[in-house]
Image (tube, rainbow, N blue to C red; front, top):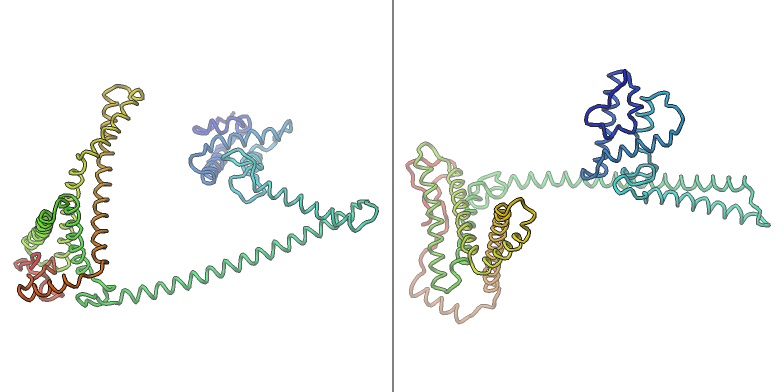
Length: 410
């Protein structure tokens, strides 16, 4: 029977189809097919997925057949597996095959360097052999002896370099082991630290409950910044109103989430209350950010950018099947640019706001203003600030009962 080329490999095995047809056993064909697929996988791994591995292996088969010439192939399995399929290279570059790069088809620079090194070695041996003689004569035996000595010297140098590389590798491994052991010890010591807020042991410096409560405060501050950057840049009175309203909305959402959790009944742990508060604050901040982006998205600069992108995409309408399809693609692209630009404007406002705040903190203190503030504080004490978002129960170890109150703020 004449063996057929397996499906999916017709393009690769087309040059050696006559050799493949002589594989008379099914197990042999399966074995050679497995080797061919392994070679394709190796080429893709060495040259990257964007390279046509089938084309590379096909050209390799053509070169091997051209080298074979008119000499008959007596063992098709051995010829395919041992001569046609393997990659041949004298350099360590996995992309090299027969002295050429498989991905770019250019000459392999590593092979050229090896060839130049060999030529330089022979030239050095020839120079040493001729300088030792008189009359300019070249003694072949002397040249070969000198070349052999040069090769032995290079081999000794290579062995020394290899030994140095091994020693450096072992030193790096020792350093890595020491760093890993040091990290394990440091991590164990960090995990053994008590919470710096509530004192809970083995909390890595901050327990989950305190971390969530601190995160709630950070989210409230971030929400206030977003609101001020979006709606509160017109004046100080407007800014104070926006701050008050945004903080009330954030803490109201947290209160609502905590109240719903407690109203569900059953035993609720303080960690669960803090987690519910953090998740509610994150959702409220995300909704606030969406409203802020939507406000910036329809301002004049963003609208101009939207119209520019839409007009640019409509000029490429000939690339689409119909005018409606081109308009739909242009609308989608312009909307994406619109909201990306709006997000960029919001981020720029936030950076400007925070930079101004840092500049105020770093500025030189006004002693007259501080003295006036102290006098005003003595005349009219300042109201108490809201320090904790989620009210804690009396004991950290006991769960919160469903009937207890857990609100936000004082």
